[in-house]
Image (cartoon, rainbow, N blue to C red; front, side):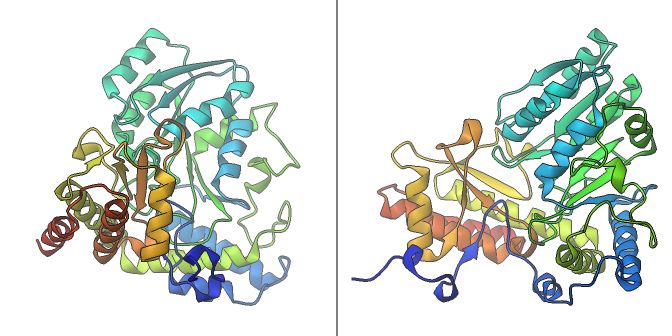
Length: 395
């Protein structure tokens, strides 16, 4: 009896990871993980750490030096909830997906009042409705949003919303965890005060760090916040000056993860942000074209709001998401993601992030998804799917 791929030792498996994170890491990043683990108070490491932070500043195009927190971005989002908000804040949380919804629950215990503006999870936030909400509640002091909610695969118009928030005089918090480095999203052009991201998605690094772009207004707010944590893993203030060589770290940084981030930044900056964004976009467009040609539907209400880093596919009601994952992995060696929250059980998510943001991965993903659905009795046209994707790629 032949064992399934899930029964084989990891070293014997050949797996293509087309998930929404963790994603596969670039070869340069994997090599960097094998560098010597330096003592954090070694002057060589402290100067190296400073250089990595300055590279981050270049990548984010910010006036202030970004902060690195030593934990994957869930730590960063909870740290922002604890450090940035206080009981004087009236917060407007904009919800278009599971992660935007969840951020509101982290903020609620720390703020004075939490307001929500929600949209169906296959749509995006309407800028005019944001303006109307701000006009009706002039006491709103902070607005928060998830730019790209991967369970929905949609992209919110953060630049336009940020302009409305700035005109209102409020501060703006953006979760860009699964969008930064995969598309044109930068903190300052979008009037963002607290920009939360990480290297474990579109930068092709392993999970383990949070990156924060913090405006001068945000630093001022946190310094004035009497409840902002200090001497805590959730403290952002403790890391304000840690980027400078010679300054102490609040606690031991993740040295190997910093090595990986350094390599990821070098690759991103050397390839050029515009080129990186373009291949993410081409891969996603090819994938969406193939999905439609196969006779399937994307979750997003229309292409104009669909993400260039994740394609979310509606599943036929005759199959389960777990069955699709099992067959795709066992027969084709391909791993996808399933939905979360409202989309759980209803979709398959195909990631186009970092190393897999190459058009050939769209073709491979389509072949595996259509093959799995076909084995489960769904009438899909794999040939048409791959042909449509290749047509987009050749254009």
